[in-house]
Image (tube, rainbow, N blue to C red; front, top):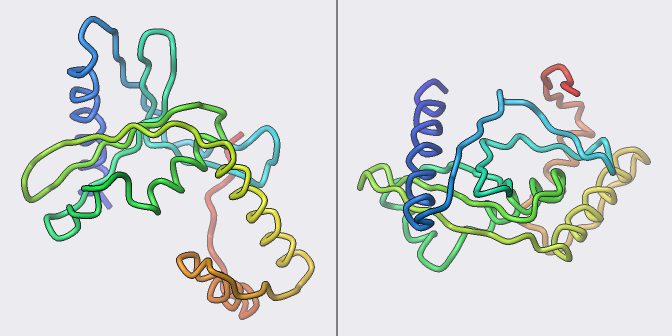
Amino acid sequence: TEIGNQLEDLTLREGLKAIAADRPGEQVKLLTPQRLMLRSNENRMFSANVDGYIKIGHEYYILEAKTTGKYAAHMWENGVPENYYCQVQWYMYVTGIQKAFIAYMLVDAREIHYKEIPANKEFQEEMARKAVEFIGHIDNGTEPEQNDMDALNAKDIWNDVVAGASIKLDDEVE
């Protein structure tokens, strides 16, 4: 949505300021992609839609922007919410970048905070393995077994695929 894009851009800019404030003397620069879909060199089925990048010194990092209200602010108290952790780990896996930052805005409080997340190679490889396994079920026309991945609702996704539901994808950008 238009307001969502405006808040995302604001969160990226203000998040960058917060990150830079904690790194006096270092050059911190925001680089924003033109909303491009990135593809992994290792597996062309794996893609990422990164909000932005920051350059600190000579190193590049992922910068994701999130907004939330006061009723969900507690999710950030003990670290990064699981779904966002998975998202940035996936993005790091696809891009090969070794660290990500999530800037998040508490809209009601008009506050910007950030979390720093290092790459977790074992976790990334397990996500990739599960993604390949799931895609194999689609290719083979076999239903995946139910497991502890309730958050993904794998059976619901599978049922949508089998029922012929479709998702319109933008043209590929290489």
